[in-house]
Image 1: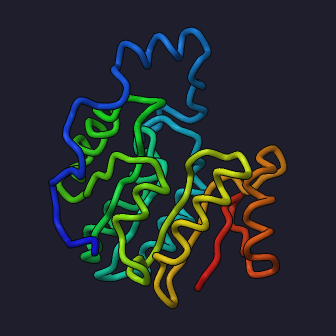
Image 2 (image 1 turned 90 degrees about the vertical axis):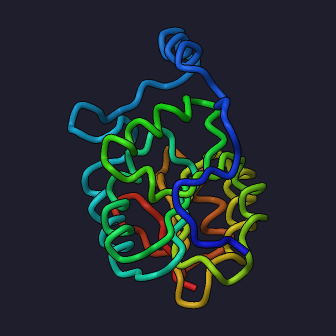
Length: 203
């Protein structure tokens, strides 16, 4: 069972990708350039409307487990970390950090004063889900790989972990990310609520 804890990481350093390799990857086009940056939050693809909607959802949770799968540099997490801390939630950051350096995420979270309150699980989504007992997670947000098979696997891995009344939601429920829409609709059908391009299902 996932235990309440702070400051400790599930895996030791070194991280999956070095800063030098990441910067070279950005320059060469191997890794995408973040769409949003320069607004005081970490760079990424999360809009302000999405951040406010995500924050409002998480603000309703008290003394629960909140899991974000696919954190990148922490842009989306920067919207929810303050309320998670204020409400006594345990916040988990799940990411293999294969496409950006984990130390970048940690630096942004440290600058915000949140790092000591985040439990880092450096692993791929499906592997990380195995560390959690069923029916224990209040909210899980999925923003990992966007192809159909990966999203289907993520939903299959995390849905059992969400407790009754809890929420499973994710990013990029859009036409250009057809794999996300296809996998979500196949599993949940008319039970899906869409908020600012994010999908949302309550158990």
